[in-house]
Image (tube, rainbow, N blue to C red):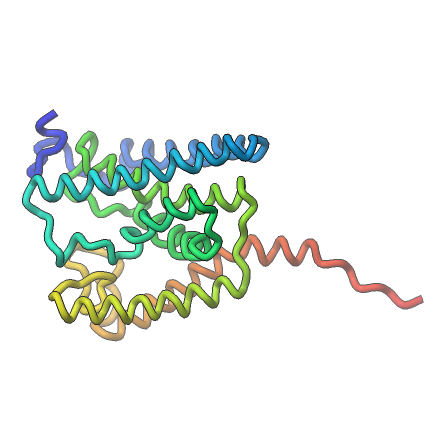
Length: 245
């Protein structure tokens, strides 16, 4: 148990697409399919399921902060909830409990787009299975994705073109605010001042500030891909034009 929470984990390192990684992603996929059963459930049952997911999201995030404090890694430069997934953990729980549509828009585009990347390519380093960090990462990011999918497939929420515009505008305003905070406290939330120190997709991008434009472009493409199912759905439902006789 001591090694489970150890800062210097002596177990196996994380292996990208290794058996443990594939198993974690499979569990998350199965969870999303199981939650589809709640489409036929009563409002009370759906509310209980949403509350359970919210409590797991919040409890897991609190545990993450406690662990970092226990191993001496908690500081305001890295642990404040300013990264996209960090703040969406808290907002996503509120969305689930209160069925908040405004938060849903951000959860659908930013949550799925960002957290899904973290599930597929997690930054775990030495913390492979069965370390606490392994479980914390997949629970946190996996449930962000699941929460957005649940609200879409079970509760009937859906984004619109206006949602896409609001997320783009709101996201850029948020990035500007966080950049100001970074300058004030010497942090690098959202990586707006420099590339992350660990290996990532940023390594093949141009230097600051030009990589920020590349990130914007990748984000726009990701948002459009996430909105594509609704584009197709709306197109299929569009009535055929009346033919002249």
